Length: 122
Image 1 (cartoon, rainbow, N blue to C red):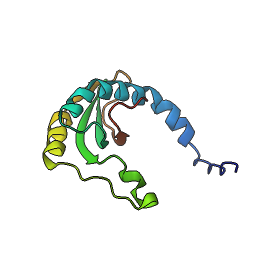
Image 2: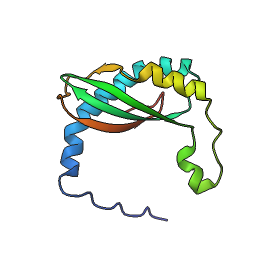
Image 3: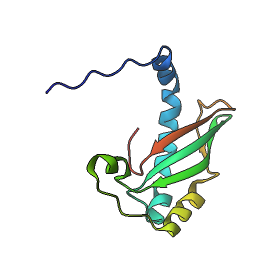
Image 4: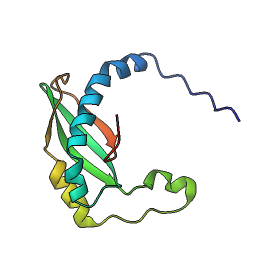
């Protein structure tokens, strides 16, 4: 069957997405360099919800929420993912929160959220 048509984005959103693309790539590259820290905590297959703050030419990770792999598909499949070890979650938060990532296109004063899975590509 043909794919369902995608809903049109609100006016201005495509332009904003294009404007933020360099910053997104820079943040992904910086996060990829931190994958080893996440893996050392035992969370290779976890999904991370990050709250970020832009600084002048860099981004600080303010908060890290951790979800087990497969959490997004639980509703569709009815199969709950394995629970995460509380120590591993605390380790990942400690390893990432307050970390500053170099991002030359960042302009100070914005907060945003981003999902990231260790080992993923931008």
